[in-house]
Image (cartoon, rainbow, N blue to C red; front, side):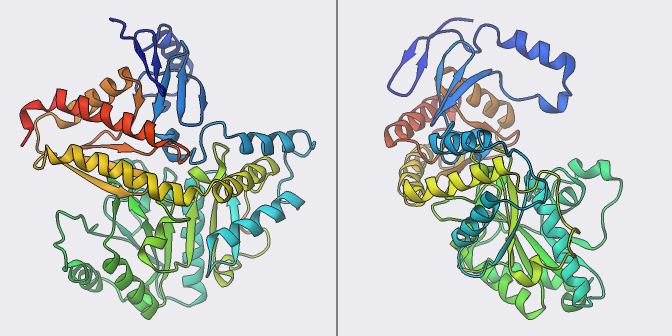
Length: 447
C-alpha cells in the first residue's frame, strides 16, 4: 500500500494506513477472541489524547467518534485521570453496596446536574443494564398501580442495548431473533422520520399510531411505560418537539411513565445537560451511560423518588454498582463539564460543525441530508443509491487514510461525534476531509 505523508496541526500520518503490524494484531486477536468483538475498520489504537487518536505506528488522527460517543470530556482527560488515581491511591477500589463518601458526593452532584424533577439515582456499569433497570421500574410501577397488563410502548428503529429486555424494546427485529419470542406486552409504534411526517402533521402522525394501538390495548389499564431513545442512533434523528409534548400529555392522562434512553445524548453532547431537554418536558426516568464515566464503565438510571424506591432493599443492585473508581470518574466528568463550560461549547461548536455539513449537502440535495444537534450529527444518504452501504464503508476508509476517524453505521449513514473538547480548527479540517472524499466517491451525483 502506498504511503501518503500528511502533517497538519491536528493530523500526522507518516506510514501506510492501516499501519504496519495492524493486520498481524487483528489475526492474533481473532484466534482467541469472539468474532462478535470484531468488524471495526483496521486501526490499532496505541493511545488517545483529547480529540486525537494514535495508532501503533504513532500516526495521529482526528477523532470524530469519541469511541462511540463515550469520551465527551476528551480522551485521557486530565481531571478524570487525576480522580481515578485518587481512587487507586486510596486503597478502596471496590465496596459492593457498602457505602462510602465518594459515592454520596457523586450521586448528590449527579442529581443536581439532572435538574428539576429528579430526586434519586441508581448506578450500574453498562448502558443496557440501565435500560433493563428502567424496564423493571416501569413494570413495577404498573403493578403498584394495579394495571391489568404491564405494557411498554417503544419505537421502530430505536436501539436500547444487547440484553434481553433491551433488545425486545429495540426496533431491530433481526438482532432479537435469538430470544425466540417477543413479549406480547411490548408494543412498537412507527418512528416519526422526517421523510414520513410533513411539518405541521407531527401530532396527527402520533395520534394515528396511538389510535392503532388502542385497537389492541386500553392505554390506562394495559400500558405502564414508554421507552424513548432521545434521538434515533443510526441517524441522529430527533423527534419533532410537538410530537413528544403530545406524547407526554397522553402519558400523563393514562398514568404512563416516560423513560428516556440518553446513552448517546447525555452529558452535554447535544448542547444541553441531557438531550431530552430539547423537548421541554421532564421525564419520569432517564437512562444514562457512555459519556457518564469519561471512559470508565459507568451507567445509571435517574428518576423520581416514588419510582426509584419501588424495589425493596436489595432488590435492585449490581456487583460493580457505584464502585469508587467509577464514582470518582463520574464526578470528574461532571466537574469538567461545569468548569470547561462544555454544554455551551457543544452548542457553539455544534453550530459550526452542522454548518460545515450543511454546506456539503448543498452540492448533493438529492443524495445527502444532515441531522443532529450540538456535537452529534449524521449524514444520511439516499438508501436507493446503488451500493450505498459499500460506498459509505469506502468513505470511512478514505477518511481514515486522510487522518480522520468517523463512525460507519453499516447502513445508509455515517455518524460524527467528536469529543466536546475539540477545537474549531479541527472541526473545520475534519469536515473538509469528509467533503473531499464525498466529492471523490459521489462526483457524478452533484446537483
